[in-house]
Length: 544
Image (cartoon, rainbow, N blue to C red; front, side):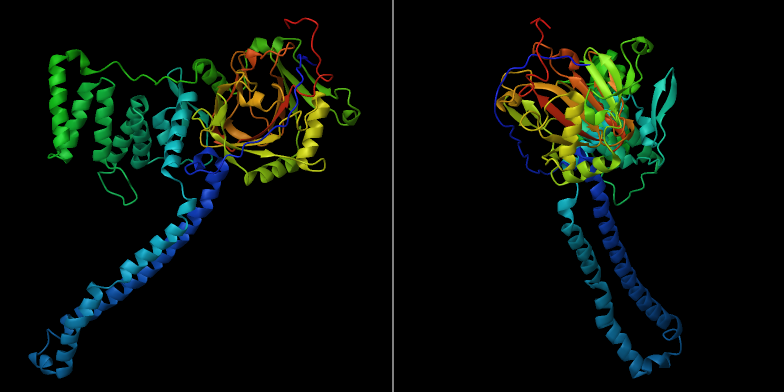
């Protein structure tokens, strides 16, 4: 089935912008996160060496202690004539003059610590930056919002949302990793620093609860403390209008830090506000922050949560079907492709088992060295954005390469010319922590778009290949068409971006839902108007 679009002829070559590697982008690709595991393995080895050296040092100190305490137990408590022994007197004087000095002022502990620091610094370039920590925290909050997850359950290592008043597991991980009070504090602090008090309150509440449960026992790896969490939580409640609770938390903080002048001033301020404005006792409740980019948030999140389960009437449409498809191509007669027509307006089709395991691994392997932070069009330029969290690479290919063979397959199924310059180079994408791409169009919607600057016409069609599976999340949601396509490993999704008259089809507004669990890889082939004049003809009706 084809829906032709009028094509305007234009000539030119597609140029690919190479985005330089920048710091703080580990969180945007799960591949990079996985690579960080090997770095931590090295750090574990360095720490083991440090511990061994420190144990040897402590054994030496314990031996010295045993020797000296033994002398005081046996020799120096004996007859006074023992001190008359010049050898005993000499060893006592020597010990007090030099041996104790060597033990007390030994540099061995410092040398061991310095060796550990030097080893750490060797790996520092491959370690996450502050931007990575912040990006990972934002990823957790994004998953919390889009999938309506309870923060309390996330802290326990569970993925639950409340349905009909009861917490329901939407995914059961094979390994459950609970979060600490310090983990929750850092997530809450990221929200706090963005003045996002909706999230900071929820995460800092959990942080305070967990810190209280430890009896304020300090751990050297922690950045935050109970006092820090109380401080941030009190101000977060104040900003949401819950002055009564802000006062209560501040008073608890003063119990631990009674000389904190700033908190004393806050307490005085809150008390005055409660006297002058009694209605501020509880505030108006938490309100989720708005989004500058996501104007269809409710529909988007509902489609992400349903993960491909559409309304029952959707499947009663007799024009939606499954078949073995050849597109009249002799090369597909003996091995037709399993086609599933998912939607008619816009026309969206799923090709099952489009790619083999070997081909998928080849594509991912070729892309790894070229992965850079994904960008979006902003006027005439391209830039990174919070509403697209992933890394991507562009692959060229000869006729004999895996990329070239995929081009041939795509051309047979679609009947379109897809090789450069008729189609863009294959874009391979790996999503990060909570990786997503909020609702957008693949085709250009502005005459200043970089797509038009390439002089190949607009993007007439999209062919997206799922190179991996995911355990949960990651669906492709078509917002106005009101359906979503779950990730089907080795399958490919195809749709037309333009109407038959060459105008953009607004019903193709779509989004990549955040990946809840899994490592999502896709490959995109964007096919341009240029070169499709006889493969994808215009209609006689200029309004179509």
